[in-house]
Image (tube, each protein chain N blue to C red):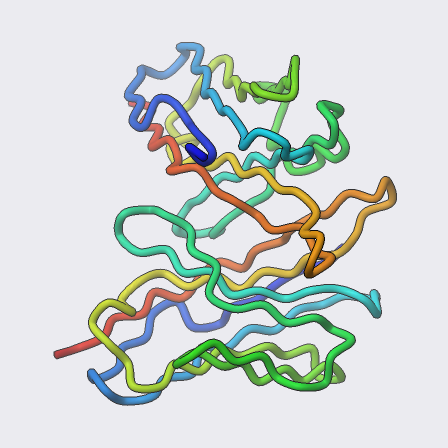
Length: 117
Length: 117
């Protein structure tokens, strides 16, 4: 199993540009989460999907942020237009029910380090 | 809304000594799960230990153990015989089942632990 795959690993862009972050969850996982990590706020939950449907997007900071999950194997997080304060590490994570333990285990990707200049 | 608080931004400990990381949370739920994740400099997120709220016995995983105080809503992590490889950011996380049968993870701001040689 390749794990949760995120791309790109690093992204440097200029203020005002559109940024698209990509995530491929682990096959068979039915929940997908997008988190943002900063020094001040730690890991913030931005949005999560269950069976490709957005369940809770209350963590999305503003309308400049949008996320989609067109199928079970792909999700995107888009920032348009980007601003310097969006600079952070963005993580994607996926999960499934653990049949033995009865709780969803959360698997993280390696994150995208975004720098907006 | 659930919140998770880690009041120690940074801590250090001498190799082979014991250190305790604090975590408190706020919830009105009775059934939930608590976790500690480790994030080394590689950015990888590693599950260290988990605790089910309905279990009174504190979870233990080798050198890692928790002190779960449900009434006080406290969930501290104790690392015994600290090793240089324990140097990392540690995140406390709360998880509960959502209305749609999904699972939502809320993380704290993290504690950066440095193990000194």
